[in-house]
Amino acid sequence: MFSIKAYRIETARLVLRPYCSADTAMVDAAIRASLPELQQWLPWSLKEPISMPEREALLKKFQLEFEEGKDFVFGIFDKDENTLIGSTGLHTRLDEDSREIGYWINSLFHGKGYATEAVMALVKVGFMIEDLSRLVIKCADTNLASAAIPQKLGFKMIERITGGATGTSGHPLLIWEMRKDDFSNSSFAEMEILAFNRKGINLFLHP
Image 1 (cartoon, one colour):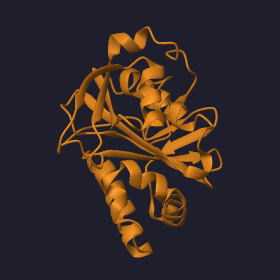
Image 2 (cartoon, rainbow, N blue to C red):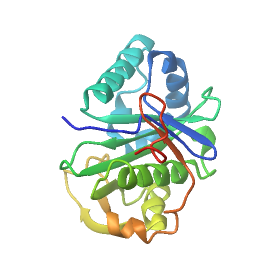
Image 3 (cartoon, helix red, strand yellow):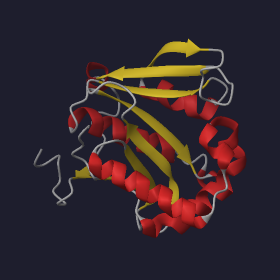
Image 4 (spheres, rainbow, N blue to C red):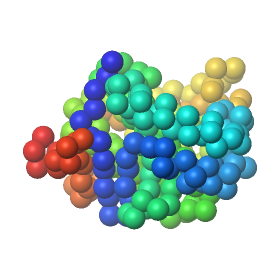
């Protein structure tokens, strides 16, 4: 099992937190609005749309995995938590001191910098709160919008995978990496965010 301290993250415009059953309708609406774009890049979306009971069961699975330390999926919400902007996560697909950051944005909110803002917050939490040594982002080489984010934030492209094991609907896969020392020298290391544990304690004030 893995562990995580940060349960809720707040940026200037966003709230990142685990999903719950009450989010089912929001998530369903966001995925349906984004399906043409999602199905270009993300294999899981090829099974969409799913029914509302299936959607609720999936969110419960995400929530349980978060609580049990199996994987850490965050919804990206507006500040009122009435709209789902997208989804992200600190995924446990790597070794104990590393996480993979994945993300997608509701097509209704493309071009507003929300993905970049969410990823910057996760990077800062990953290195400063979770004390990880490495963060990885993977995306298709033709997904220019997704690839622009790690490039902009100072991740280094360490591998380009072609062939059948890409995991991105047949497109060659780019693997980007940032290590803790790289983050310390990044332009967004001083970004102001809040991170709270399950008890609502601000982890930047009481790590």
